[in-house]
Length: 354
Length: 276
Image (cartoon, rainbow over all chains, first blue to last red; front, side):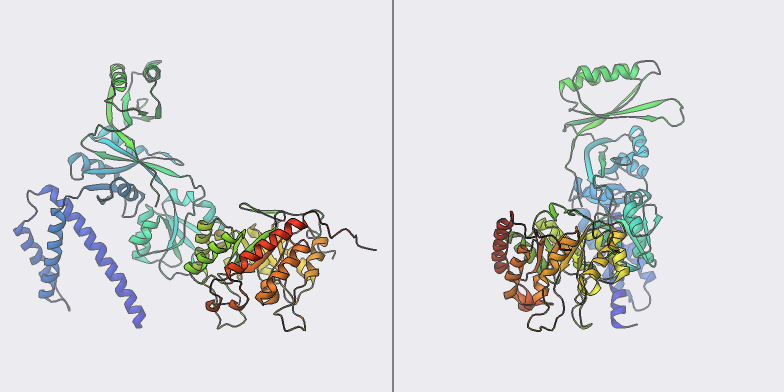
């Protein structure tokens, strides 16, 4: 032990305190959706009593009360502001959070475990918006998300393309010569295959890119680095060794912002439908779009789970559903489908880079 | 000389580095001896770009005579060079001194430099050979021309055809200049090999006032380029400040060099064939 080491540990703890405080405030903001009023004197009393029970060591009851009163004050202050909550799947620093920040800079991004949590939370109104990936330019469509779009009562309100840029991150003061293993999501590892091979690194799959960054910060494994974006370096106190290590620079993931309220503006529209299992039924639908000179930007089929040989079709096209031409087209499409769902009209945003 | 199978081939090798074609265009490489800070490197990079340089040089790993002298910023220096390239668009060249770093340096820069002191570091030569990156091989200060070409052979033998030679002066009994620029060596390797040859008048002379005349001499013997050290505050430089040109001096030098290159276009000083 020396002063430098002690101080380094103190810095790490401060950083963890801040991360926990941030998580606490996020939960407080989420709790607002369940309460009638921000100020709840009963609950405040309970919080202070709880923490006083755990005050120990050099932490006096007076100090504990002072700290938590300050935290509660700030929490109320934040709840009184009209923040929009945006749910995304993954840990803080995930590419979904980049999309969320690009969608609404002043929004608060709330990390959630699964895509289903995002859809359910948005449908019930716990979160004002949700951010979900629908397609990656190298990896293709994200099936989970598309099937959730068909299932839940939510609407697409914006398309957000995010440029995927990977960096190699390490714990501060790691010598680059000592790196042997690299953790990341299997897709990120695959996208940096040449880089990993050139350096003879062992690729270790992990459930999430940002999750790998979090693990590196928390567990501090030896000789390790992670592949994630630069935002993760900031969030998990890591150092960027090298930027843009991906093999192909053109790598874009399209995210959708979803809400339980549709919005009518925008120059793109998405629908889902099924047709009778008969010759030419899908063609008849596409014919209507062709006759009305509407440009399709995506068409995709997805098997319906539990019903073999049954498919739903996703179509994204140019145009707003309030436009008479589009309105007319959709009326005709509805007549010929066995299932039809309008997912919303929305704008396509600018490509988000780190 | 029989062991120079790959170095002594006929023809003329050109090496494309981004927009620059070494061996075809007369190339001017310039920049600080060492990358000292982001601000210093970018200031100098912008100045040499404005003056008309084609490639930015800068050392991140420094092979210093004394272990107590500034050793370079390492990986941090490489990041700074990459940033300077992003700003100016100039390709970058930097020295690599350790075989373990070759892959890292290759990932950041456009040309690897093997310094005079490492010319015969054979494990390093094999490693840069494997990297496939363009390599500029400086002549060792006590090396004969054939020894120098043998080292180029090491790199070529690894399957890397992108080798550039650099004459930077040799040790002689003369002490007035830091080294003695062996300008005739440029002519010799130009007739013996197909590889481009660059002249480094900064290290060859160690004296700023000798850099312009030696640069013009390099043009006269049809060298393929020069490499010059430039610093905006030579008195504050962490290494080799005494031999650095100021940006405005460098600008004048570039003008004179480019003029002479034009005049020399039609000239062929190599019209006399070797007599048996």
